[in-house]
Structures are given as C-alpha cells and as structure tokens.
Length: 160
Image 1 (cartoon, rainbow, N blue to C red):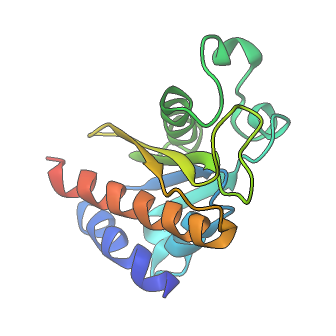
Image 2 (cartoon, one colour; image 1 turned 90 degrees about the horizontal axis):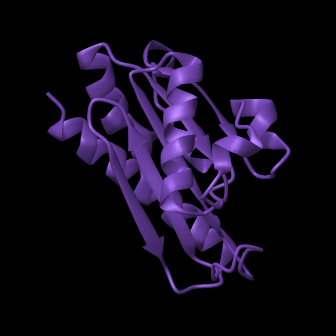
C-alpha cells in the first residue's frame, strides 16, 4: 500500500526531473515511507525527517526560537515554515510538511486529536488544515499521510 501512495507523485517528479524533501510530525514517518517505498525513489526523493519535538526543530531543520515568533506548532504558518525549510536545506524543488496531533489526546497547544496542518512549498504553494474528529492515533496518522500525498500530487498537477 505504501508504494502506491507515493508512486503517482514520484512518477510526476521523475518525468519533470524535480526533487522532493519532507518534514513531518504527527504522521510519524508514514509520508516519508510512502515516498521511499516507491520504486526509483532515489531519482527524486532527497530525504526527510520527523520533527516531533521542540528539540528536533533546531537540530534537524535549523529552526531557531526567533523563527517561530508569532506562530505555534501544529498551525498553518508553522507547516509552511517546515515545508520551506526542508526544501531549502536539502536543495529540493519541492518541500512537503505535516504537523498536528494524532491522538488519542490533543497536543499541548490546544489542538484536538485528529488535527493536522499540511503545506507544500515549491513552484506551487499550498496549505490545508485537516480535522478528522477522531482520537484513533493510527487512523489519524494514515489520514494525515494520505491527505499530504493528495495535496502534493494536486500541486504537482497544477505546476507549470
């Protein structure tokens, strides 16, 4: 199942000779895994990370506290920052990010379980918020991954 999720976007990236970098949080690596599972991913997937804690922001993406001024994690502005930063740090054409609260409880920022923000940075920019209304951690993780892949594929199809 993982390879089918990432293959469509991967094929489009390969045809266009473009590259992708991913930063995710509450999807726990499922987005990165979907891309790595696609045959031939090394032609277009540059890498990714799971930015799960405040300690991982500066260590993995060089995001300093001043970069977070006026925003909080699990928000659309933060998702946009993650997507831009991972794209820039890996020198990719595209950056894709996800941040949220998978459950079974909400996060420390006041978001309920099933909340995620997903962003794409590149030739086309987009950001969405997903609210599943569910406390099922694993189901939310898969939903976040699928929605991230769908958003990214949509952006790829709209890009010149």
